[in-house]
Image (cartoon, rainbow, N blue to C red; front, side, top):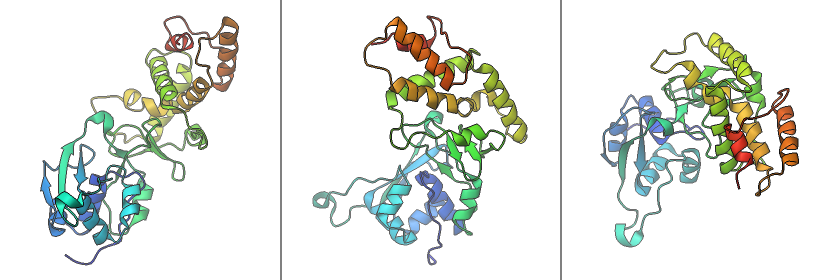
Length: 289
């Protein structure tokens, strides 16, 4: 096999995506590349994002050696690589170099990476890249530098979000990101509001219209943009709500505390008022222990 081309992984990239891009740079398939590295492959190979590949510790070590990317850097960039340390007692000096393909359900599939970032990473790699969203945050990809975003693997390319500057202005707190519980509640609440056209629905409708107008080539499919772009459309409000829910005490609020909380939350969400009915999930969260 010829000497390595410089193809660096993108932060958060799927292992299958990086392997596919690396192999394409040599005009090879991933199976051919792994065979050249002496790695035994099992499972059915599929193009990302429908499949991911797991490498053994020895296979990852050989990949790192071939690409000349230190294994620590490669593991940090590829979150689903992270091979377990080989057992020297059972497997010898380094263990066996193996790789296994496995299918990934749609809800857990990686998202299309920013095309500008993908092009800039190497003049040799032209295949599209797929990245896994950061854990503990909404399942979206936003590139603030190039104004691109994606929220659904059914869109093969990221979307132009230049008409939606509020998406790039909204960033989770670095010192104190939302807790998983509050983020789960907030995501569920804004999803329900979106589906039932409640509270911020007029704003979301305008945001969706601007997004679709800026992306006329958005690929048609069985699901409409109103569904596939939902997490992206509600992203600012979801983070705002999650941050507010994190400030709630562990015990139920008094009526006066609920009123004050809803008044403050309405201000943060830029709503004239917020009075959820008793079937509203926000009302249920305020009354939960």
